[in-house]
Image (cartoon, rainbow, N blue to C red; front, side):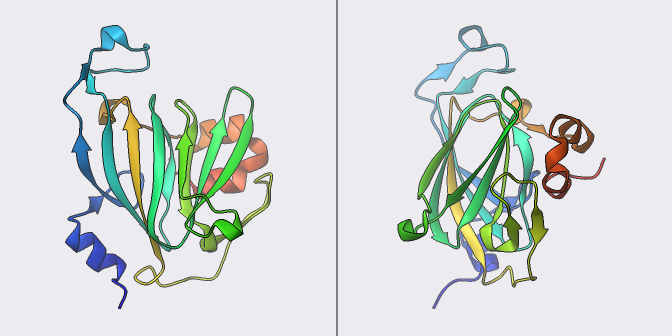
Length: 190
């Protein structure tokens, strides 16, 4: 018998994440402490060399667009695939990566988001998306208790909330006007 999303959240002691979904930090590597004097200027505070979280994304929820100065590696554990979206301001590109366990459907069990790009995620079956992101349409409502993904996220250098920046809808629409529907869905109202 499969666990429900709320049972997983309870067993793993997951809490709501500011970007959406549910998480808990599972590891903070204090064996090496990195000082801001040895890091690029985007890093606002000292930090451990790496951190890890569990992240649960039930159907009907999403990880809102945000950015951090660290690389973030996603690991698919159980459940349905999720799509990681990246918006890169340097070249105005959009990229979609399907994170999941079915390699025959071009899913990947692990993916690394580079530092300083806007990114978020959503349950893959919740939306129909064109390859260029110009068409982004919500699908039929699904039960978030039985349709979910449990993933892990590892940041190196380690994650600190002081560096976490949620995207402003109006700003990203001005930078990516062709993605207005996607940006509107994956950002909070201002």
